[in-house]
Length: 188
Image (cartoon, rainbow, N blue to C red; front, side):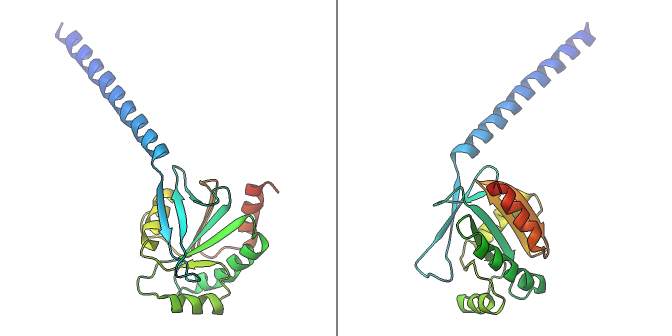
C-alpha cells in the first residue's frame, strides 16, 4: 500500500511539474513574440542619424526594412583579419546594395569616429560603421543569439534575413561563402 501511495505521489508531482514547466515555456515564447527589443546605433557618417536594429525571437532585422539582409560585422580596428575582411564586406555592400545592409560594430571601447573613419578609408570598409554606446549591447545580443559565449574570435560576421539567422562566420571568410548565402537568401 505504501508503495502504491509513493508511486501515485511521484506521478502527480511529475505531472504537475511538467504542466507548470510547459506553461512557463509557452509564456516565455509568447513574451518573446510580443516584446521585440530595438537597439539604436549611431553611424559615424551621420552624427544625427540612427540605425535601429530589432532583436527578434530568432535573430535581428533593420527596423525600417525588416526583409533586407542584415550583415553584422563585429570587428576591431587593430585586428589584421578584420582589416582584410573589411574590403570583402565593402564589395558585398556594393554588389548587393538594394538587398543588403552591412553594419560594422567595433568591439573597442576607446575608438572614436575619426579612428573609425580612418579605418573605413584605409581598409575600404565601404559600409556603415557605428560608434555608439549601444555597440556592446548589440554585440552581446548577437553572441547570445549565436550561442557562442561572450569570448569569441573576431571578425565575427552574422547574416540575417527577415529577422532569422542565415549563417555566421568566425574569422576571415572568403567572399564566395558570404555571397552564396546572400544569393540563397534572396532566391537567386
